[in-house]
Amino acid sequence: MLQVSEKEIEARLRLDNPWWGAEPVTQYSELPRRAYLKPFSDLIHDHSVNRAIVLLGPRRVGKTVMVHHAIHQLMEEGVAAGRILYLSLDTPVYTGLSLEKIVLFHEQQQNLKAGELRYVFFDEIQYLKDWERHLKSLVDTYPGYRFVATGSAAAALRLKSQESGAGRFTDFMLPPLTFSEYIYFIDRETALIEADPGSERGYRATSGEALRELNDEFINYLNYGGYPEAVFTERVRQDPARFIKSDVIDKVLLRDLPSLYGISDIQELNSLFATLAYNTANEVEIGKLSQNSGVVANTLSRYLEYLEAAFLVRRIRRVDENARQFKRARGFKVYLTNPSIRTALFGPIDAEHPAVGAMAETAVYSQWLHATSFLERLYYARWKKGLEVDVVGLAPGLRKAEWVVEVKWTDRFYERPSELKGVLAFAERNTLSRPAVITTRTCSGVKKVNGIELEFIPTSIHCYTIGRNVLQRWQI
Picture 1 (tube, rainbow, N blue to C red):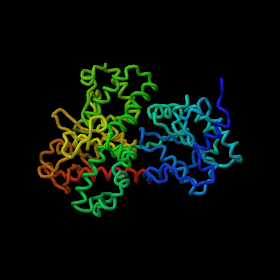
Picture 2 (spheres, helix red, strand yellow; picture 1 turned 180 degrees about the vertical axis):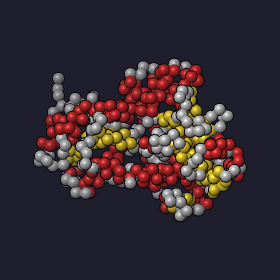
Picture 3 (spheres, one colour; picture 1 turned 30 degrees about the vertical axis):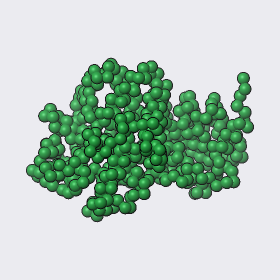
Picture 4 (cartoon, rainbow, N blue to C red; picture 1 turned 30 degrees about the horizontal axis):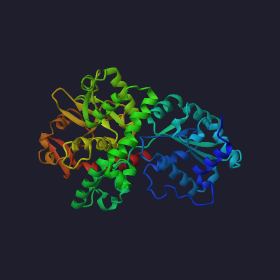
């Protein structure tokens, strides 16, 4: 049987690494750089610990592009092109080759000297069997290298990096575009948004007309704005069901998860996900979900774990009116990690669509996705009287509510704040460290009801603020 020759490997490596030649590299340079490039690059430059970086995230959020931007940045900083190796492991020519053999081949091919710092980027690493064992071995054997791995089969990457790479891997989460990134990508940031001088890290629209335009862009963001390709490609925006569903959803549900976990009934998984997507931001109970979907409860629980590990959904747990968790919580909320997924499945929405409120709430939660440690402190409150609060932020290490947010896509409660029964009852029972936030469609301001302070802010401004501030806090 014929084997892939070294000449074929070398030819493919030169194709994957055009910067080894004399011509300047322009691949992806025309695309804007994601806001997450800086903290990602900072990790690459951090030599204080000998660890590989595992870049995690859903499909089509720009992991490969960000890797190439990081490579361009290294060369701009003076790193010799020959000391940078990039390869995508879904390429057939690399099938059956160990990571170490490829690294040694690169060293020989580029005549690299011992002790020289090198940067190695493995894209789509999940296509290599037992990748985590191979990568851990490389980290231990070659301390003079900086290894970066990416992959779209996020479930396998997340689970295996935690189980097999303890002390050797640093996970970096690249979420879908935040709303602040989306506004930057379409070059509307300066025109529509400005810092709020009355708030330490707050923002506001530059004018009333700007707020109307910002809300229009927020609806666009809900429909397709989570994916960089959709933002820049008219064809994708016109047919998100074809492109986003095919490239993002179907490949995970029909290929990645079945192959990773041995799922035989793909239609069952697909049906469950469609049900969850349609009901994003709603409370779910395993028993009722089992009855409606026809899937037994134990299988449902496993499927939910798989979907969450693949960054398609996020479960949020429930607390009571005293911010205490339930010992046997049957109900929880399920959010899509990207509101655009619902559009791909069920069609676009407008500002008056019945689902816009749930989509707005989904968007608010999706802004927190990078702050994974903070996300663990987010809950929703619901108790026997049928009262509810959408977002409850608990103090770190304590079971005490610090702040709350109620997400609305209407100005009604600005005019009638006393109707916010759930928020008022919760705030009365818990000593919050800041005013309760109520999002609106257009209204801003602070009001008091029975001594409880309520801060009203447009949902689009709130989403922009979270996305911007989460990243800034993470970089500090």
